[in-house]
Image (cartoon, rainbow, N blue to C red; front, top):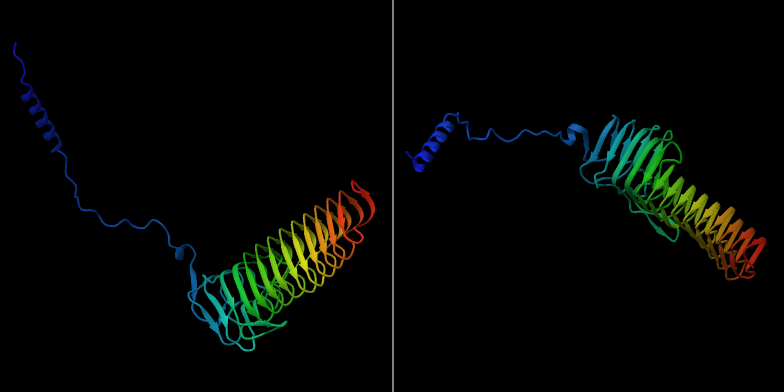
Length: 342
């Protein structure tokens, strides 16, 4: 019996393999070129118009953005005179050197609708000298004329050094102010229907006025610190009036030297302090609250539950009905109906 030579058999198999592979056509090894872009650019998705100087008036709907810092020597910085506009300051500043301060950083004219103002600074050089606000810059940071604006959002804007108001777009018509800061203005800090996560410092008038205020802080207001319908997680400070004035206050604090720390209809888990007046005054019910005053009543409420009032020289806690409350003062308590307490 003959045997096969394994070496010859393997060589024949390899030859057959090479012969079979060599029968296929060979393509070019040179790449055809760079891949074509498959995504649209931002300019294609949202065509935007650049702004590189001021004053500038927007008369056509669309999206606009600053490309650099801009300064005016008089009058307004940017005027929005139409509906459906987005103005992105892109982290840049609108400034004024007008002396005395006049004009508006961003003006919404003619009752504009559907407007967004985003991401930047409006700056002047007004300062406070013993209660007198004066200097160069804008009269108002963001303001309106010839009709109230509606459906407006102001986000991540800082305003400083204005003669009058910082951000004032009225308190109705779906005006939202969020993540904004105002410092050193002679009038109102922020005025809008809803104000979220914002701060107002060193305002000659009210710090924040709104229907709803959430997570807001005011320090150094000449009048009311925070004035709103509903306040949640807010802190207000005033030298002459209410630290916080609200219909309903939840988890808030208010401080005033010459006025009431907090004045509310309903207060829950709040802290109010005053040097000369009532620390926390509640027209209806106070729950889990603390009020302190040096010379006035610490805490006053119609119905107080689980509350504590303290005063150095006056009534600690005053209520018509008190349940599980404590007072320290002279007298400690002035309560008509007591429950679960001495």
